[in-house]
Length: 195
Image (cartoon, rainbow, N blue to C red; front, side, top):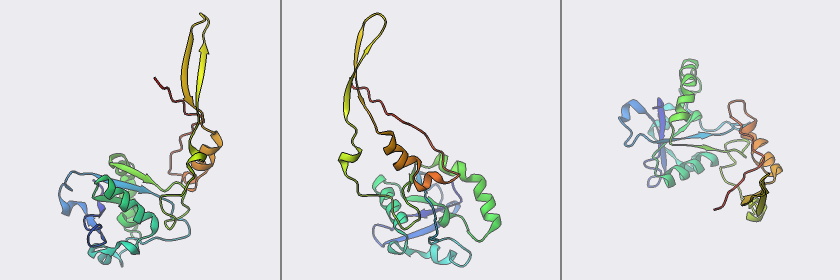
């Protein structure tokens, strides 16, 4: 478990988000938590520091969090996950010792999270997780593809052909995927075989 997590238990009722130390919480009910991957950008979001520690531990109205954090809380609650790991709220930002200790654990934090929410298209924490899109611009048309092999057998498959520029612009060149710690997976086509 991460050293600290954001407790969303009261987010739906009292509108607060609490930073908690996981050893004090026990087994965290079912042990599930989500992680948020995002760019800080020029905007410095609410963060855990020595001077803000008590405030964050006593609770913070959800509306005081940046839009990306609010959206992440909403998704976690929709998934039925009570805890969330956000680097700026779970690592003491003005403590070199805490940063070094937590940085060593980051791969495990992401590995064992129930899900990682990525604010891929956001340049900072104020932009949120979601964008308005036109479905017709992202729905790939289905095409029937006929394959002939050397024995003259014919196979018919249905495939969706995705514009590689859509992937390039929307994913690979998105702000989050320009950061060094983000693993980029490069796909140019997504075949979909229909039976």
